Image (cartoon, rainbow, N blue to C red):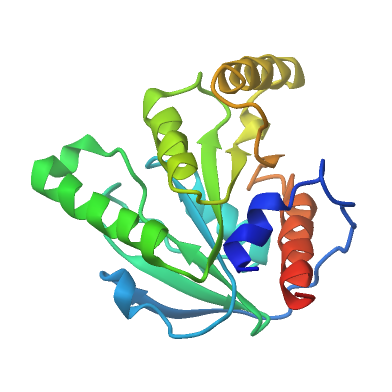
Length: 222
């Protein structure tokens, strides 16, 4: 069974979810590429992070690894078209993909961005799970829903990671989450794993890392 298939079936509702409290002892930048075919030639699992521009991707990666400045934030959204690899504990990778949906880079830039993102997502065998970041403050966006549909059509395993929940009251977050869940259930019989996070407060760190570690253990036991 391939690592993608394992992640597709791995969800708290289907398997016993073990709390592990992963200890990240090492988090290092490895390489950046403009071509997914030049990514590291390894068999290690990769967890790629993606979302619309300004969703808080770099901040989340830095929070998860507790390594301030590991993932750099560009001063101009949509400008950096790179696939960034970070190795964690010499056992698995975090992959920082460019943000999508930034219209100001123009038609040519968007085409280049789409080729880069789709090339990695559809062609990278090491991709174990795509962590799709959604800004918790907004209603369901068409571009995100279409992106999820593309992932489903191509059998790409993914989890939804809501960001910036510290910017909302508990009541507003519950309302937004309910609305998002109801919208997703219009198209999905079963939802992917869902996490609520705050890079500023550290919320959701244990849950996301436990999920990754459980998937890694499942892969290693195959």
